[in-house]
Length: 602
Image: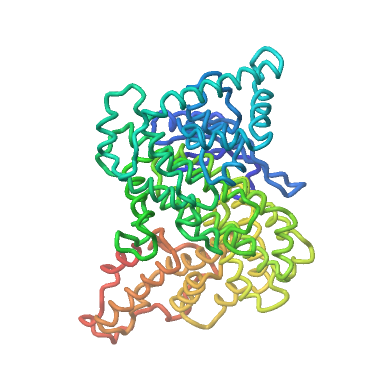
């Protein structure tokens, strides 16, 4: 490990909705050149370079983006801006943007009357209800006129234009009223056949369905009646009408709860909704015989799976974002529980979607929610119950493991560094408060967690280096390697003791581990070391001993070959007679040390 680096450049690639560190460079030009090559390779949807700098005085790491390609979101054709669209013709009013504007302007009235914008635009009865409802229509027209920033004239003139569009729409409904077919028999196919060659077939069929739905009392009842009309052989223009109606019913907050059941665990509800939105309820173990969901849900799921209801799918994805942003606990009351719920939602979405761009706005909602949860007060409250600094760092790493977003992880890392540098914690980290050997093991496990965490390389290096320094201090104080060397035992047993300590996590990566490995290698380079391992053993036992020692090397993670030649090291001279082979041992019962040495060193 290269410790003490103050500035480096991280190259990150994007294949899902998150970023992965691909390479770390110390040179800016080399980093940007490599990033450009990765982007041209088309293996990643996005590539960027971050400049990571460590401020020794502030004990803080800062990150600056110096290169970015491909990180912008590709807008879906079903995306809606959230602003009121100007409707200057009846076609504008009946467009998707027009209907979305009606929802934004009048959703409380639509919820009260249990109708949708499409129903309002295709039924004279619903329009008259609005017309007679005091100033609701006037307020909606006035708000729309104010929103027409690019239109010339006064607000009054704009309002007159809007009323003219409404009047024209009313005339269209009146003129076609007698031509709207009846759905009294609940059979859609004959009506579709009769309308196939008419130029206004979509309008007439929508009016027929809206009239058929008008007697239904609840939104769920209406939705159920529309779902029944879904079949795989419907013409595309008919499926578009059904998809529009279903999507608008799903925009009513309670409908999805009524379909799927409202749960106390909101994270579980959102994960279930993610599977539903993708048409993948079968991945949750649900099938057509599942008692968990109604036939309506499973029927919708099958059409969503075939991408036959794109607008409904988009509405459900938007609903996920709304649920994520809602100021309610997601997966529990604790900070870690809520972040764990967020992480589960994010990973579920990533596993279900191939088009990462479709997820951008939802995943941004996940990251923003995590950012609101992770703050100085919430982290301080979480750490208040932990008095031991090692326990505090472990709690922060528990938090990091379930945190979404590089920026949020950086906030957590900035809480770790000060804990390591606080004077009142030095004696604890150096093992002066308890058994120092136990503290060495705790430092190793903590360092392993740091190195496996999804933090920037700068943070990892600084934190890992600090932990290694504490471990080195303990080694110097206890003189554990020197004490092992001074024991009146063979070099082979000394090697095994140190290897066992390495395998049981007593030495942190860095100077501590280097010292321990170096002492083992010195012993193993002494003449006759391998012979000493199998001295006096029968062939079978000797083979077992060699294999056991090789396994111990692997457990200790000693991967490099050791040399057979001796080294000049006065402390490592073999003790008298310890490695000499007895002349009394029968040669046929010994394993040749030379023939086994290569396998041992491997």
